[in-house]
Length: 142
Image 1 (cartoon, rainbow, N blue to C red):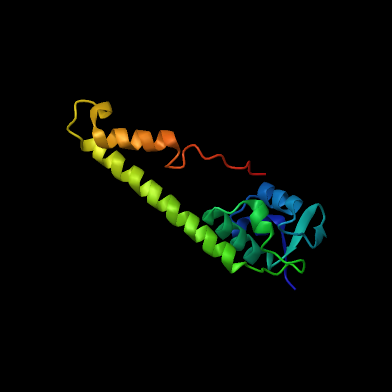
Image 2: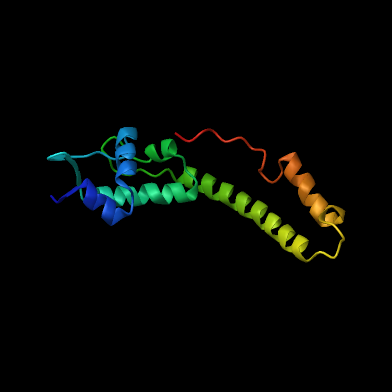
């Protein structure tokens, strides 16, 4: 089996060594030994790091991503969780699209002031009410 030292993993994956050490501390990846002072990883760690990157891009927390890996280290992806995240992303896309459209309108609006523009005022009310997600509290990422 091919072993890569931490520098090789960092170079191939684009993930800094400090992040690799953090992921190891969190139990997301595991080193297979050491060569001198450098951690060694099985080559399969690159696939695992790709799954972690995909999960982060999709908006999963590191704790949620950790649940993807079974005790044997193999991925076990919950399809219902994927569908729920896709629904969440759809909602975020709709909200951001509305904000984008409002900003584009405000950029060309003929009202003397943005505060006099009815469409801009609707966006402000939606943001103030939390309808655009601005007031949602998120759990801290650890």
